[in-house]
Amino acid sequence: MIRKRYFIQIAYDGSLYHGWQIQPNAITVQELLDKAMSTVFRQPIETLGCGRTDAGVHAKDFYAHFDIVDADEMKVLSSIGGINALLPYQIAAKQIIPVHEDAHARFDATSRAYEYYVHYEKDPFKLNRSWLVKDKLNVEAMNEAAALLLNYTDFSCFSKSNTQTFTNNCKIVKAVFEEIDGGLVFTIQADRFLRNMVRAIMGTLVRIGKNEISLKDFESIIESKNRSNAGQSVPACGLYLVKIEYAYVKMNRIRE
Image (cartoon, rainbow, N blue to C red; front, side, top):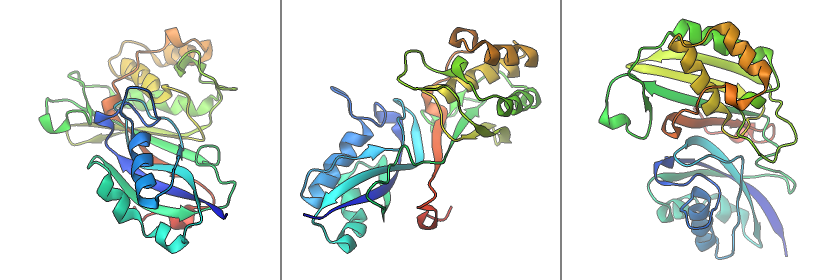
């Protein structure tokens, strides 16, 4: 029996799903992907994802690893069409990548990046894909605050409580707002993220943008390490996982 490990790259609109990870009594991306792949490969397939996205969160670039037994590698790599035929339109398989037997989609990721979208005017075509904020925000102040994130590593104040993590330390290397047509996009990149971290950061930065708190307040919130001091989590609809990086699959990435 020959067992080989692969990564599969997917993208999905999370509006209809209760996140990535399989849950009882809820439809998830992982459940539908495993079912489609098990049918195509005619053997049980269990994927393990690069992270957990919450209900309503989207992913433009998501990886999962899986093992397959006694299968021709060329047939595995060319099975994307068959997998997509069995997936709903909101989930797309992009490519399958052969990796070494110990490769891990979650623990081997060296960098992750998210984008969060905000729009200012009611737009039915942005429903479930961007957050409607009716107040114009002070983008300059928000960028000043976002830049301060790079000075810290302990982000306990932005973490969901009672999570099973050994550390709340993360290394943020980019955090910036850009104005786009009718709204904003916030891009944040780090080596890892805590549960609910990006949405909590965004909720606190919006308070800066509304002139409700100062830059000094923002620093005090981070230094307090207390989630109750930070802003509310923003809605999931505007959040996208946009890039995952691995040292050993970089050459296989789809051109962007």
